[in-house]
Image 1 (tube, rainbow, N blue to C red):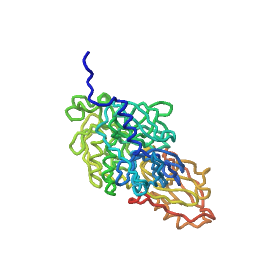
Image 2: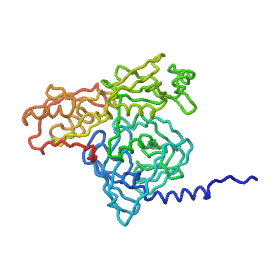
Image 3: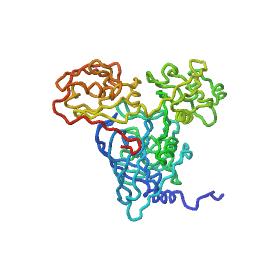
Image 4: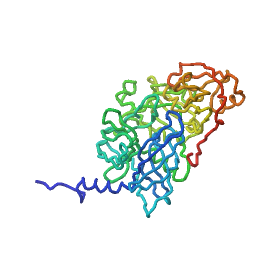
Length: 455
């Protein structure tokens, strides 16, 4: 019998055991409390997971839906029960990742956590992994599995929930559940290949966010800078080469154009276009992306590497549309310009600009002021209901929060206010109601998130 070829000096299970010991100082349990309703998220408290990616600067990586886009307080607890306050530093406007900072000087007894290296290039189908996190509020829960899909479209959690898009997701079977959001998905060497993001209820299907855009953003965060993020206000979807052939793009043509190679599994198509955005009138749903800036574009990384580098400029895209190739030039908009960073708190109501996230769920124009929380006076719940966006007040169009405040500042407390709203889930729904400023309430306040501190 031939001797078994073994390049490791330790059995496989021993290597995993050693790895778990090393990860204990890197993974933290995160307790969070969101103070106000904001965007899709209501005021709440919960627990999740994060992990150290830069020990010297105290940078912790977790999910966007853990940080939340609205104001919240976060606390991290290490395996040795040392607690530190987490400062929100950066969350991506679209993708499900965010960075916190803690002060390394707050750690006692010379404790220095080890950082986990981000290695997106190591992910491969069939790769064995471990998830180490705060599963069901139990610290240091470990779950194992094998990566199955590397080119899954982002999961959809419903129109009333936060959804990622314009990125691949990994899929695998895993027993991880609530509280493990933000956990590192690591290989046997202890390098993170993805971050745990969500699951399909009632099944073992788990979804992991790849780390290419995380690595891109971390380089800027380490320098206390904001990573450039561009948008065409369009949503793209990955389809197989067989599906592309059904749309008229034959395999031979796709190979000649460089989007069908041994390393590609499909192409990108246009799935949604928001009215009034840069892509409106230039791209069509069903268009297949062939190249960006004269380079083949088979995936999301190639597309958004170009778009993020051309914010405020234009991008040249070649598409296959209705059996023909055509070239279009699109303005690249700053994604942060359509990401709400402030809200108005008045009469218990919480109001802010309609976000890309809200508009995406219904393919609606990004305009108006979203009622994140109804108040007992100004916007009473029975009359307004959920998921409404203000379009006009007293006949004056309201395109954003500042336009609304300009109208309200001239309204007397005893004067009726006529408000026109639409349902962001179905823009065809319109309603008009009459309200007025509450006779007694706390002064109206505007809260703005700092791009530097994250608050």
